[in-house]
Image (cartoon, rainbow, N blue to C red; front, side, top):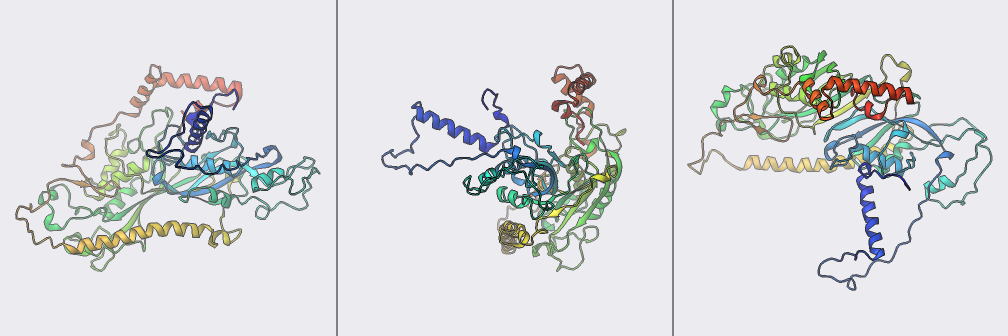
Length: 560
Protein backbone atom coordinates (compact mmCIF):
# COMPACT_ATOMS: atom_id res chain seq x y z
CA UNK A 1 0.00 0.00 0.00
CA UNK A 2 3.07 2.24 -0.01
CA UNK A 3 2.81 5.26 -2.30
CA UNK A 4 -0.73 4.24 -3.25
CA UNK A 5 -3.98 6.03 -2.60
CA UNK A 6 -5.96 4.13 0.02
CA UNK A 7 -9.64 3.89 -0.92
CA UNK A 8 -11.17 3.67 2.55
CA UNK A 9 -14.66 4.03 1.09
CA UNK A 10 -14.28 0.53 -0.41
CA UNK A 11 -13.07 -1.09 2.81
CA UNK A 12 -15.20 -3.50 4.80
CA UNK A 13 -16.59 -2.36 8.14
CA UNK A 14 -14.37 -4.78 10.05
CA UNK A 15 -11.27 -3.54 8.23
CA UNK A 16 -12.12 0.09 9.04
CA UNK A 17 -12.55 -0.75 12.73
CA UNK A 18 -9.18 -2.51 12.80
CA UNK A 19 -7.59 0.51 11.10
CA UNK A 20 -9.08 2.94 13.65
CA UNK A 21 -7.84 0.80 16.53
CA UNK A 22 -4.35 0.64 15.01
CA UNK A 23 -4.23 4.43 14.57
CA UNK A 24 -5.40 4.94 18.17
CA UNK A 25 -2.69 2.58 19.41
CA UNK A 26 -0.06 4.53 17.47
CA UNK A 27 -1.23 7.80 19.04
CA UNK A 28 -1.06 6.30 22.53
CA UNK A 29 2.43 4.92 21.95
CA UNK A 30 3.66 8.27 20.63
CA UNK A 31 2.25 10.06 23.67
CA UNK A 32 -0.13 12.22 21.65
CA UNK A 33 -3.13 10.60 23.32
CA UNK A 34 -3.77 9.14 26.76
CA UNK A 35 -5.47 5.73 26.97
CA UNK A 36 -9.14 6.04 27.91
CA UNK A 37 -10.09 4.81 31.38
CA UNK A 38 -13.67 4.08 32.44
CA UNK A 39 -15.29 6.75 34.62
CA UNK A 40 -14.84 6.25 38.37
CA UNK A 41 -11.78 4.03 38.02
CA UNK A 42 -8.06 4.51 37.85
CA UNK A 43 -5.38 2.88 35.80
CA UNK A 44 -3.81 1.48 39.01
CA UNK A 45 -7.13 -0.10 40.03
CA UNK A 46 -7.50 -1.97 36.73
CA UNK A 47 -4.50 -4.15 36.04
CA UNK A 48 -4.14 -4.72 32.37
CA UNK A 49 -4.07 -8.21 30.90
CA UNK A 50 -0.65 -9.70 30.29
CA UNK A 51 0.64 -8.77 26.87
CA UNK A 52 -0.12 -11.39 24.29
CA UNK A 53 2.51 -12.62 21.95
CA UNK A 54 1.66 -11.22 18.60
CA UNK A 55 0.90 -13.94 16.13
CA UNK A 56 3.07 -13.73 13.08
CA UNK A 57 0.91 -13.68 10.02
CA UNK A 58 2.45 -15.91 7.41
CA UNK A 59 1.54 -15.05 3.86
CA UNK A 60 1.55 -17.52 1.03
CA UNK A 61 2.87 -17.07 -2.46
CA UNK A 62 -0.05 -17.34 -4.90
CA UNK A 63 2.33 -18.06 -7.78
CA UNK A 64 2.96 -21.48 -6.27
CA UNK A 65 -0.67 -22.53 -6.64
CA UNK A 66 -2.90 -23.27 -9.55
CA UNK A 67 -6.34 -21.69 -9.81
CA UNK A 68 -9.67 -22.69 -11.28
CA UNK A 69 -12.96 -20.98 -12.08
CA UNK A 70 -15.63 -22.40 -9.78
CA UNK A 71 -19.37 -21.76 -9.70
CA UNK A 72 -20.99 -21.80 -6.24
CA UNK A 73 -24.65 -22.07 -5.30
CA UNK A 74 -25.46 -20.29 -2.06
CA UNK A 75 -28.40 -19.41 0.16
CA UNK A 76 -28.91 -16.54 2.56
CA UNK A 77 -31.60 -14.91 4.65
CA UNK A 78 -31.47 -11.25 3.72
CA UNK A 79 -33.33 -9.64 6.61
CA UNK A 80 -30.24 -8.23 8.34
CA UNK A 81 -28.34 -7.33 5.18
CA UNK A 82 -28.40 -4.22 3.03
CA UNK A 83 -28.62 -6.27 -0.17
CA UNK A 84 -26.39 -8.65 -2.08
CA UNK A 85 -24.07 -6.09 -3.70
CA UNK A 86 -21.37 -4.36 -1.69
CA UNK A 87 -22.03 -0.62 -1.40
CA UNK A 88 -19.37 1.76 -0.12
CA UNK A 89 -21.75 4.03 1.81
CA UNK A 90 -24.22 1.42 3.12
CA UNK A 91 -25.01 1.37 6.83
CA UNK A 92 -25.73 -2.38 6.79
CA UNK A 93 -23.44 -5.25 5.77
CA UNK A 94 -23.91 -6.83 2.37
CA UNK A 95 -23.76 -10.47 1.30
CA UNK A 96 -20.84 -9.71 -1.02
CA UNK A 97 -18.86 -8.18 1.84
CA UNK A 98 -19.30 -11.33 3.94
CA UNK A 99 -18.34 -13.51 0.98
CA UNK A 100 -15.26 -11.39 0.34
CA UNK A 101 -14.06 -11.72 3.93
CA UNK A 102 -14.56 -15.50 3.86
CA UNK A 103 -12.77 -16.01 0.52
CA UNK A 104 -9.85 -13.83 1.64
CA UNK A 105 -9.51 -15.45 5.06
CA UNK A 106 -9.60 -18.92 3.50
CA UNK A 107 -6.78 -17.85 1.12
CA UNK A 108 -8.94 -18.83 -1.84
CA UNK A 109 -8.17 -15.45 -3.44
CA UNK A 110 -5.13 -13.23 -2.99
CA UNK A 111 -6.01 -9.53 -3.28
CA UNK A 112 -3.27 -6.92 -2.97
CA UNK A 113 -5.43 -5.11 -0.40
CA UNK A 114 -7.58 -7.55 1.55
CA UNK A 115 -9.47 -4.71 3.28
CA UNK A 116 -10.85 -3.40 -0.01
CA UNK A 117 -13.73 -5.29 -1.63
CA UNK A 118 -12.70 -5.62 -5.26
CA UNK A 119 -13.52 -8.78 -7.21
CA UNK A 120 -12.18 -7.58 -10.56
CA UNK A 121 -9.07 -9.79 -10.60
CA UNK A 122 -10.94 -13.02 -9.89
CA UNK A 123 -13.28 -13.38 -12.91
CA UNK A 124 -16.15 -12.85 -10.51
CA UNK A 125 -19.77 -12.89 -11.68
CA UNK A 126 -23.14 -13.12 -9.93
CA UNK A 127 -26.54 -14.20 -11.18
CA UNK A 128 -28.92 -12.00 -9.19
CA UNK A 129 -28.59 -8.71 -7.33
CA UNK A 130 -31.12 -8.94 -4.53
CA UNK A 131 -32.09 -5.76 -2.70
CA UNK A 132 -32.05 -4.94 1.00
CA UNK A 133 -33.92 -7.54 3.05
CA UNK A 134 -34.45 -9.97 0.14
CA UNK A 135 -33.34 -13.59 0.61
CA UNK A 136 -32.03 -16.16 -1.86
CA UNK A 137 -32.03 -19.95 -1.77
CA UNK A 138 -30.49 -20.47 -5.20
CA UNK A 139 -28.09 -17.58 -5.80
CA UNK A 140 -25.11 -18.38 -8.04
CA UNK A 141 -21.67 -16.79 -8.20
CA UNK A 142 -18.49 -17.73 -10.04
CA UNK A 143 -14.98 -16.97 -8.77
CA UNK A 144 -11.46 -17.98 -9.79
CA UNK A 145 -10.04 -19.56 -6.65
CA UNK A 146 -6.94 -21.35 -5.42
CA UNK A 147 -6.82 -25.05 -6.24
CA UNK A 148 -4.95 -28.10 -4.96
CA UNK A 149 -4.40 -29.26 -8.53
CA UNK A 150 -0.62 -29.57 -9.04
CA UNK A 151 1.14 -26.95 -11.10
CA UNK A 152 2.41 -27.94 -14.54
CA UNK A 153 5.55 -30.06 -14.57
CA UNK A 154 9.03 -28.55 -14.05
CA UNK A 155 7.65 -25.76 -11.87
CA UNK A 156 8.87 -25.93 -8.26
CA UNK A 157 6.33 -26.02 -5.46
CA UNK A 158 6.83 -26.15 -1.71
CA UNK A 159 4.75 -27.13 1.27
CA UNK A 160 5.72 -24.05 3.25
CA UNK A 161 2.78 -22.00 2.03
CA UNK A 162 0.28 -24.74 2.74
CA UNK A 163 1.78 -25.03 6.24
CA UNK A 164 1.03 -21.33 6.72
CA UNK A 165 -2.59 -21.91 5.81
CA UNK A 166 -2.94 -25.04 7.98
CA UNK A 167 -1.29 -23.34 10.97
CA UNK A 168 1.90 -25.44 10.91
CA UNK A 169 5.39 -24.10 11.29
CA UNK A 170 7.22 -23.92 7.98
CA UNK A 171 9.75 -26.70 7.66
CA UNK A 172 7.90 -29.28 9.74
CA UNK A 173 7.62 -31.26 6.54
CA UNK A 174 10.60 -31.06 4.27
CA UNK A 175 10.09 -28.81 1.28
CA UNK A 176 10.52 -30.21 -2.16
CA UNK A 177 12.01 -28.48 -5.10
CA UNK A 178 11.65 -31.45 -7.40
CA UNK A 179 9.45 -31.09 -10.48
CA UNK A 180 5.85 -31.98 -9.68
CA UNK A 181 4.93 -35.34 -11.10
CA UNK A 182 1.26 -36.18 -11.14
CA UNK A 183 1.27 -39.86 -10.16
CA UNK A 184 -2.42 -40.23 -10.92
CA UNK A 185 -5.29 -38.26 -12.33
CA UNK A 186 -6.42 -35.40 -10.09
CA UNK A 187 -9.70 -36.18 -8.31
CA UNK A 188 -12.08 -33.30 -7.59
CA UNK A 189 -13.40 -34.95 -4.43
CA UNK A 190 -10.41 -36.62 -2.80
CA UNK A 191 -7.70 -34.17 -3.87
CA UNK A 192 -9.39 -30.78 -4.18
CA UNK A 193 -9.94 -28.26 -1.41
CA UNK A 194 -13.33 -28.75 0.33
CA UNK A 195 -14.54 -25.34 -0.79
CA UNK A 196 -18.05 -25.51 0.65
CA UNK A 197 -16.96 -26.69 4.10
CA UNK A 198 -14.13 -24.16 4.29
CA UNK A 199 -16.39 -21.24 3.42
CA UNK A 200 -19.28 -22.33 5.68
CA UNK A 201 -16.89 -22.33 8.65
CA UNK A 202 -16.10 -18.68 7.98
CA UNK A 203 -19.48 -17.30 6.87
CA UNK A 204 -22.27 -16.11 9.20
CA UNK A 205 -24.91 -18.80 9.93
CA UNK A 206 -27.50 -17.08 7.74
CA UNK A 207 -25.26 -17.42 4.65
CA UNK A 208 -24.54 -20.97 3.48
CA UNK A 209 -22.70 -22.42 0.49
CA UNK A 210 -24.91 -25.25 -0.78
CA UNK A 211 -23.01 -26.62 -3.76
CA UNK A 212 -20.11 -26.16 -6.16
CA UNK A 213 -19.46 -27.17 -9.74
CA UNK A 214 -16.16 -28.96 -10.46
CA UNK A 215 -16.82 -28.73 -14.21
CA UNK A 216 -17.45 -24.99 -14.45
CA UNK A 217 -16.90 -23.96 -18.12
CA UNK A 218 -13.89 -21.71 -18.71
CA UNK A 219 -16.03 -18.89 -20.17
CA UNK A 220 -18.86 -19.22 -17.65
CA UNK A 221 -20.60 -16.04 -16.46
CA UNK A 222 -23.24 -16.41 -13.73
CA UNK A 223 -25.13 -13.39 -15.05
CA UNK A 224 -25.10 -13.89 -18.81
CA UNK A 225 -25.35 -17.69 -18.88
CA UNK A 226 -28.49 -17.83 -16.71
CA UNK A 227 -31.49 -19.06 -18.70
CA UNK A 228 -34.13 -18.53 -16.05
CA UNK A 229 -34.58 -16.92 -12.64
CA UNK A 230 -37.30 -18.00 -10.24
CA UNK A 231 -38.73 -15.92 -7.40
CA UNK A 232 -41.23 -16.68 -4.64
CA UNK A 233 -43.05 -14.14 -2.48
CA UNK A 234 -44.60 -15.69 0.64
CA UNK A 235 -47.73 -14.52 2.48
CA UNK A 236 -50.35 -15.86 4.86
CA UNK A 237 -54.12 -16.27 4.59
CA UNK A 238 -55.42 -14.20 6.35
CA UNK A 239 -52.76 -11.61 5.59
CA UNK A 240 -53.29 -9.62 8.79
CA UNK A 241 -55.45 -9.96 11.90
CA UNK A 242 -59.16 -9.79 10.91
CA UNK A 243 -61.65 -7.93 13.07
CA UNK A 244 -64.80 -9.61 14.44
CA UNK A 245 -67.71 -8.91 12.11
CA UNK A 246 -69.77 -6.89 14.60
CA UNK A 247 -66.84 -4.51 15.18
CA UNK A 248 -66.24 -3.73 11.50
CA UNK A 249 -67.67 -0.46 10.20
CA UNK A 250 -70.57 -1.13 7.78
CA UNK A 251 -69.33 1.66 5.50
CA UNK A 252 -66.23 -0.41 4.70
CA UNK A 253 -68.39 -2.62 2.49
CA UNK A 254 -68.71 0.28 0.02
CA UNK A 255 -64.98 -0.02 -0.74
CA UNK A 256 -64.51 -3.79 -0.91
CA UNK A 257 -66.60 -6.96 -0.56
CA UNK A 258 -63.59 -8.92 0.75
CA UNK A 259 -63.51 -9.27 4.54
CA UNK A 260 -60.68 -7.23 6.04
CA UNK A 261 -57.49 -9.22 6.55
CA UNK A 262 -58.47 -11.96 4.10
CA UNK A 263 -57.44 -12.31 0.46
CA UNK A 264 -59.46 -13.49 -2.53
CA UNK A 265 -57.04 -16.17 -3.76
CA UNK A 266 -59.04 -16.88 -6.92
CA UNK A 267 -58.92 -13.22 -8.00
CA UNK A 268 -55.17 -13.10 -7.25
CA UNK A 269 -54.61 -16.19 -9.37
CA UNK A 270 -56.51 -14.63 -12.25
CA UNK A 271 -54.42 -11.45 -11.96
CA UNK A 272 -51.12 -13.35 -11.70
CA UNK A 273 -51.76 -15.25 -14.93
CA UNK A 274 -52.04 -11.98 -16.85
CA UNK A 275 -48.30 -11.37 -16.36
CA UNK A 276 -47.33 -14.42 -18.40
CA UNK A 277 -45.85 -13.76 -21.82
CA UNK A 278 -43.80 -10.94 -23.30
CA UNK A 279 -44.71 -7.47 -21.97
CA UNK A 280 -43.34 -4.01 -21.29
CA UNK A 281 -43.06 -3.77 -17.48
CA UNK A 282 -42.22 -0.09 -17.06
CA UNK A 283 -45.31 0.31 -14.86
CA UNK A 284 -44.15 -2.57 -12.67
CA UNK A 285 -40.65 -1.44 -11.74
CA UNK A 286 -38.56 1.39 -10.35
CA UNK A 287 -36.65 3.27 -13.02
CA UNK A 288 -32.90 3.31 -12.45
CA UNK A 289 -31.67 6.70 -13.78
CA UNK A 290 -28.17 5.33 -14.42
CA UNK A 291 -29.37 2.64 -16.90
CA UNK A 292 -29.89 4.82 -19.97
CA UNK A 293 -30.11 1.97 -22.46
CA UNK A 294 -32.44 -0.27 -20.53
CA UNK A 295 -35.18 -2.23 -22.26
CA UNK A 296 -38.35 -2.58 -20.17
CA UNK A 297 -39.61 -5.62 -22.08
CA UNK A 298 -39.39 -8.90 -20.21
CA UNK A 299 -40.67 -12.42 -20.79
CA UNK A 300 -42.51 -14.11 -17.92
CA UNK A 301 -42.54 -17.90 -18.32
CA UNK A 302 -44.87 -18.65 -15.42
CA UNK A 303 -46.82 -16.63 -12.87
CA UNK A 304 -49.20 -18.14 -10.32
CA UNK A 305 -50.37 -18.31 -6.71
CA UNK A 306 -49.37 -21.56 -4.97
CA UNK A 307 -50.41 -22.95 -1.58
CA UNK A 308 -47.63 -24.27 0.68
CA UNK A 309 -48.91 -27.61 1.92
CA UNK A 310 -48.57 -28.59 5.60
CA UNK A 311 -47.36 -25.14 6.62
CA UNK A 312 -50.48 -24.02 8.52
CA UNK A 313 -50.24 -22.65 12.05
CA UNK A 314 -52.98 -23.43 14.57
CA UNK A 315 -54.77 -20.21 15.54
CA UNK A 316 -58.24 -21.57 16.40
CA UNK A 317 -59.86 -18.17 16.90
CA UNK A 318 -59.68 -17.55 13.15
CA UNK A 319 -62.30 -20.29 12.68
CA UNK A 320 -64.82 -18.59 14.97
CA UNK A 321 -67.94 -16.98 13.54
CA UNK A 322 -67.30 -13.35 12.77
CA UNK A 323 -63.60 -13.82 12.02
CA UNK A 324 -63.95 -16.04 8.93
CA UNK A 325 -65.45 -14.74 5.69
CA UNK A 326 -69.16 -15.49 5.42
CA UNK A 327 -68.41 -17.61 2.34
CA UNK A 328 -65.39 -19.87 1.84
CA UNK A 329 -65.59 -19.51 -1.93
CA UNK A 330 -62.55 -17.78 -3.46
CA UNK A 331 -60.55 -17.70 -0.22
CA UNK A 332 -59.01 -21.15 -0.53
CA UNK A 333 -61.00 -22.30 2.52
CA UNK A 334 -63.22 -25.26 3.27
CA UNK A 335 -66.53 -25.05 5.09
CA UNK A 336 -65.14 -27.14 7.97
CA UNK A 337 -64.45 -25.04 11.06
CA UNK A 338 -61.64 -27.43 12.07
CA UNK A 339 -59.39 -26.22 9.25
CA UNK A 340 -55.98 -25.04 10.46
CA UNK A 341 -55.43 -21.34 9.91
CA UNK A 342 -53.64 -19.24 8.82
CA UNK A 343 -52.65 -20.93 5.57
CA UNK A 344 -49.45 -20.09 3.70
CA UNK A 345 -49.16 -19.20 0.00
CA UNK A 346 -46.55 -17.78 -2.32
CA UNK A 347 -46.55 -15.88 -5.57
CA UNK A 348 -44.39 -17.92 -7.95
CA UNK A 349 -42.83 -16.25 -10.97
CA UNK A 350 -40.31 -17.51 -13.52
CA UNK A 351 -38.64 -15.29 -16.09
CA UNK A 352 -35.49 -14.79 -18.12
CA UNK A 353 -34.62 -11.55 -16.33
CA UNK A 354 -36.29 -8.93 -14.13
CA UNK A 355 -36.21 -5.18 -13.70
CA UNK A 356 -35.41 -3.25 -10.53
CA UNK A 357 -38.15 -3.93 -7.90
CA UNK A 358 -40.26 -5.65 -10.59
CA UNK A 359 -41.40 -8.55 -8.40
CA UNK A 360 -42.37 -6.28 -5.50
CA UNK A 361 -44.39 -4.06 -7.84
CA UNK A 362 -46.17 -7.07 -9.35
CA UNK A 363 -46.97 -8.45 -5.89
CA UNK A 364 -48.21 -5.08 -4.65
CA UNK A 365 -50.86 -4.86 -7.38
CA UNK A 366 -51.82 -8.52 -6.92
CA UNK A 367 -52.44 -7.82 -3.22
CA UNK A 368 -54.73 -4.92 -4.15
CA UNK A 369 -56.70 -7.34 -6.32
CA UNK A 370 -56.79 -9.93 -3.53
CA UNK A 371 -58.25 -7.36 -1.10
CA UNK A 372 -61.00 -6.49 -3.53
CA UNK A 373 -59.65 -2.96 -3.99
CA UNK A 374 -58.85 -3.48 -7.68
CA UNK A 375 -60.20 -5.70 -10.44
CA UNK A 376 -57.82 -8.21 -12.10
CA UNK A 377 -58.16 -6.13 -15.27
CA UNK A 378 -55.87 -3.51 -13.66
CA UNK A 379 -52.96 -5.72 -14.76
CA UNK A 380 -53.99 -5.43 -18.42
CA UNK A 381 -54.32 -1.67 -18.10
CA UNK A 382 -50.85 -1.18 -16.55
CA UNK A 383 -49.23 -3.45 -19.14
CA UNK A 384 -50.67 -1.21 -21.89
CA UNK A 385 -47.99 1.48 -22.09
CA UNK A 386 -49.92 3.35 -24.77
CA UNK A 387 -52.78 3.88 -22.33
CA UNK A 388 -50.53 4.23 -19.26
CA UNK A 389 -47.06 5.56 -20.21
CA UNK A 390 -46.30 6.59 -16.59
CA UNK A 391 -46.44 4.39 -13.53
CA UNK A 392 -49.03 5.33 -10.89
CA UNK A 393 -47.41 6.01 -7.51
CA UNK A 394 -48.57 2.91 -5.65
CA UNK A 395 -46.67 1.43 -2.69
CA UNK A 396 -44.12 -1.36 -3.21
CA UNK A 397 -44.67 -4.65 -1.40
CA UNK A 398 -42.46 -5.37 1.61
CA UNK A 399 -39.05 -6.86 0.76
CA UNK A 400 -38.60 -9.51 3.49
CA UNK A 401 -40.99 -12.24 2.15
CA UNK A 402 -39.26 -12.21 -1.27
CA UNK A 403 -36.85 -15.02 -2.15
CA UNK A 404 -34.68 -15.59 -5.22
CA UNK A 405 -35.63 -19.24 -5.31
CA UNK A 406 -33.43 -20.62 -8.08
CA UNK A 407 -31.27 -19.79 -11.09
CA UNK A 408 -31.32 -22.18 -14.06
CA UNK A 409 -28.44 -22.74 -16.48
CA UNK A 410 -27.42 -22.64 -19.31
CA UNK A 411 -28.99 -20.44 -21.96
CA UNK A 412 -30.44 -22.34 -24.92
CA UNK A 413 -27.92 -20.75 -27.27
CA UNK A 414 -25.00 -21.84 -25.05
CA UNK A 415 -25.52 -25.57 -24.35
CA UNK A 416 -21.76 -25.99 -23.93
CA UNK A 417 -22.00 -24.06 -20.65
CA UNK A 418 -24.18 -26.69 -19.01
CA UNK A 419 -22.93 -28.11 -15.72
CA UNK A 420 -24.04 -30.21 -12.79
CA UNK A 421 -24.01 -29.14 -9.17
CA UNK A 422 -22.29 -31.18 -6.49
CA UNK A 423 -24.24 -30.53 -3.30
CA UNK A 424 -22.57 -30.56 0.09
CA UNK A 425 -22.89 -34.10 1.44
CA UNK A 426 -22.75 -35.90 -1.89
CA UNK A 427 -18.98 -36.39 -1.60
CA UNK A 428 -19.23 -37.38 2.09
CA UNK A 429 -22.58 -37.91 3.91
CA UNK A 430 -21.10 -36.56 7.15
CA UNK A 431 -20.81 -33.14 5.51
CA UNK A 432 -24.61 -33.15 5.42
CA UNK A 433 -25.59 -35.06 8.57
CA UNK A 434 -22.51 -34.92 10.79
CA UNK A 435 -22.19 -32.85 13.95
CA UNK A 436 -20.86 -29.97 11.86
CA UNK A 437 -22.85 -30.94 8.76
CA UNK A 438 -24.92 -28.47 6.80
CA UNK A 439 -28.26 -29.96 7.82
CA UNK A 440 -27.34 -29.84 11.52
CA UNK A 441 -26.24 -26.23 11.15
CA UNK A 442 -29.55 -25.28 9.54
CA UNK A 443 -31.53 -27.29 12.12
CA UNK A 444 -29.98 -25.24 14.92
CA UNK A 445 -30.71 -22.02 13.02
CA UNK A 446 -34.29 -23.11 12.28
CA UNK A 447 -35.11 -24.39 15.75
CA UNK A 448 -34.19 -21.10 17.42
CA UNK A 449 -36.70 -19.32 15.20
CA UNK A 450 -39.25 -22.11 15.52
CA UNK A 451 -39.25 -21.65 19.29
CA UNK A 452 -39.91 -17.94 18.77
CA UNK A 453 -42.85 -18.82 16.51
CA UNK A 454 -44.19 -21.48 18.89
CA UNK A 455 -44.12 -19.23 21.94
CA UNK A 456 -45.64 -16.27 20.14
CA UNK A 457 -48.31 -18.61 18.73
CA UNK A 458 -49.23 -19.88 22.20
CA UNK A 459 -49.32 -16.34 23.58
CA UNK A 460 -51.56 -15.19 20.73
CA UNK A 461 -53.93 -18.09 21.38
CA UNK A 462 -54.09 -17.18 25.09
CA UNK A 463 -54.80 -13.52 24.34
CA UNK A 464 -57.50 -14.39 21.77
CA UNK A 465 -59.37 -16.53 24.34
CA UNK A 466 -59.17 -14.28 27.40
CA UNK A 467 -61.39 -11.25 26.82
CA UNK A 468 -65.17 -11.34 26.34
CA UNK A 469 -65.58 -8.31 24.09
CA UNK A 470 -69.38 -8.55 24.22
CA UNK A 471 -69.40 -7.23 27.81
CA UNK A 472 -68.62 -3.63 26.78
CA UNK A 473 -67.98 -2.54 30.36
CA UNK A 474 -67.26 1.00 29.16
CA UNK A 475 -70.57 2.42 27.84
CA UNK A 476 -68.65 5.02 25.86
CA UNK A 477 -66.90 2.37 23.74
CA UNK A 478 -67.74 2.93 20.03
CA UNK A 479 -69.82 0.31 18.27
CA UNK A 480 -67.45 0.05 15.31
CA UNK A 481 -63.88 0.89 14.34
CA UNK A 482 -63.39 4.18 12.44
CA UNK A 483 -64.04 4.21 8.70
CA UNK A 484 -60.69 3.57 7.08
CA UNK A 485 -59.26 1.15 4.56
CA UNK A 486 -56.76 -1.35 5.91
CA UNK A 487 -54.39 -2.42 3.16
CA UNK A 488 -51.91 -5.28 3.06
CA UNK A 489 -48.51 -4.72 1.45
CA UNK A 490 -46.61 -7.83 2.51
CA UNK A 491 -45.48 -6.62 5.94
CA UNK A 492 -46.34 -7.88 9.42
CA UNK A 493 -49.38 -5.66 9.81
CA UNK A 494 -51.89 -3.68 7.80
CA UNK A 495 -51.49 -0.05 6.77
CA UNK A 496 -54.30 2.45 7.37
CA UNK A 497 -54.85 4.61 4.28
CA UNK A 498 -58.15 6.33 5.07
CA UNK A 499 -60.30 6.44 1.95
CA UNK A 500 -58.81 4.14 -0.65
CA UNK A 501 -57.63 5.82 -3.86
CA UNK A 502 -57.80 3.50 -6.89
CA UNK A 503 -54.51 2.87 -8.71
CA UNK A 504 -55.56 4.68 -11.87
CA UNK A 505 -56.44 7.78 -9.84
CA UNK A 506 -53.05 7.99 -8.13
CA UNK A 507 -50.47 10.60 -9.12
CA UNK A 508 -48.26 9.48 -11.99
CA UNK A 509 -44.50 9.19 -11.56
CA UNK A 510 -42.10 10.71 -14.14
CA UNK A 511 -41.74 8.71 -17.34
CA UNK A 512 -38.46 6.80 -17.92
CA UNK A 513 -37.37 9.39 -20.48
CA UNK A 514 -37.93 12.22 -18.01
CA UNK A 515 -35.91 10.33 -15.39
CA UNK A 516 -33.04 9.80 -17.86
CA UNK A 517 -33.05 13.44 -19.01
CA UNK A 518 -32.93 14.66 -15.41
CA UNK A 519 -29.96 12.40 -14.68
CA UNK A 520 -28.16 13.58 -17.85
CA UNK A 521 -28.63 17.25 -16.91
CA UNK A 522 -27.33 16.52 -13.43
CA UNK A 523 -24.13 15.25 -15.05
CA UNK A 524 -23.77 18.28 -17.33
CA UNK A 525 -25.41 17.03 -20.55
CA UNK A 526 -28.27 18.66 -22.39
CA UNK A 527 -30.41 15.52 -22.27
CA UNK A 528 -30.21 11.73 -22.22
CA UNK A 529 -29.62 11.52 -25.99
CA UNK A 530 -26.47 13.65 -25.73
CA UNK A 531 -25.26 11.60 -22.79
CA UNK A 532 -25.79 8.36 -24.74
CA UNK A 533 -23.76 9.72 -27.66
CA UNK A 534 -20.93 10.79 -25.37
CA UNK A 535 -20.86 7.41 -23.63
CA UNK A 536 -20.94 5.55 -26.94
CA UNK A 537 -17.96 7.57 -28.18
CA UNK A 538 -16.09 6.97 -24.94
CA UNK A 539 -16.79 3.24 -25.24
CA UNK A 540 -15.45 3.08 -28.79
CA UNK A 541 -12.28 4.92 -27.77
CA UNK A 542 -11.76 2.62 -24.78
CA UNK A 543 -12.24 -0.51 -26.88
CA UNK A 544 -9.80 0.78 -29.48
CA UNK A 545 -7.23 1.50 -26.78
CA UNK A 546 -7.65 -1.44 -24.42
CA UNK A 547 -9.91 -3.90 -26.16
CA UNK A 548 -12.78 -3.54 -23.68
CA UNK A 549 -15.03 -0.76 -22.33
CA UNK A 550 -14.20 0.81 -18.96
CA UNK A 551 -16.07 -0.27 -15.83
CA UNK A 552 -17.95 3.01 -15.53
CA UNK A 553 -19.43 2.50 -19.01
CA UNK A 554 -20.44 -1.08 -18.28
CA UNK A 555 -22.25 0.07 -15.14
CA UNK A 556 -24.44 2.38 -17.22
CA UNK A 557 -25.53 -0.36 -19.59
CA UNK A 558 -28.57 -2.54 -19.30
CA UNK A 559 -28.75 -4.59 -16.12
CA UNK A 560 -29.84 -7.88 -17.68
